Length: 389
Image (cartoon, rainbow, N blue to C red; front, side):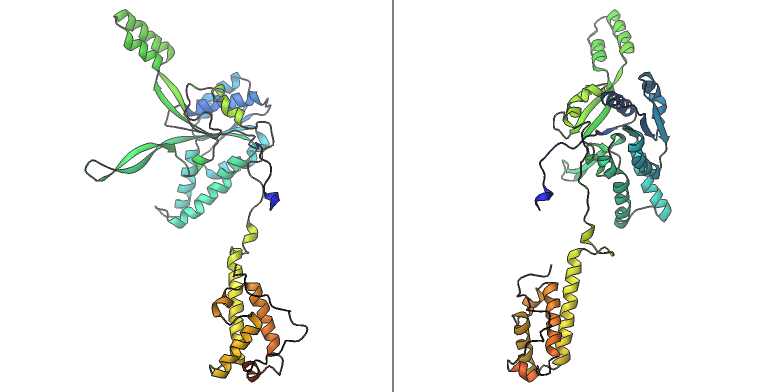
């Protein structure tokens, strides 16, 4: 199995960014800043793709135009369109934005409910929806050779804690992206956006002692904008930027992360291959097939022996023991049942051959006179040791 392992190298060649925040937090603008910065950094001549569920592309188009970058837009909230975009995106763009992925998760769930005409989903229903999301979006998000920037609405995380009176109470413990539960683990850089009061402007106003100073401070607030957007790095897989914060962030603010991925290199985040050979056409795993074959062989062995020795007389019991010791090397039922399907199938063939020899009567077997099968038999039976796989 030496080929399974190779010398480690950085094969993550594309940025995979997740940006979450509540309405008005600056997600689309920050995604735009990153997309434009990446476009210039890699020297791209292609347009930037934008899968738009909130008409955000209309408002950032002037920014792209200012930088001389073409923008191609698909305005949709249908998950099937997102799945198509993930397939064709790498053939059309170097960089693609998705804003907001939360709407696509809502669509696939609601579409399934509508098609099935149900209001609530069962455990089995999630077993259908989640693999579709994984196959058509989250896995391509990681492996596709394209820079991807995904925005999503923020939602609160809750957990139960014991209150003052000993009762379990529900508390907000943080925020997360409103999407399929595992998606937050896929991006290599996760940024949370917040809309906050401009700290420098408000500090000037608070420190003003006179009416004139407050008037000047108020004018400054108007000029500098009372609110700003703050970015907090929730996750950086390079572990360089975790917890870093920026006001009105730009592409260069995240330079340490861009330096941690192998932009321009070969993109091999996952090696090709799967484990389909472990299952048969009906989806049964290999170990189950082997166990079934062993069970079938044991049943056929029992049927063959019972056909020749149907009674439970002392003579036939001795004959059974003699036959088992001759064929299996043991008369232990548990030891025989623990043998592999290969051993049991070979033993079945040998038993059939033994019973075709006229001299091998019950009396001879009971007396220890079991004869070898003909020369064209399957051969010497392997001794016990390999359990049923």
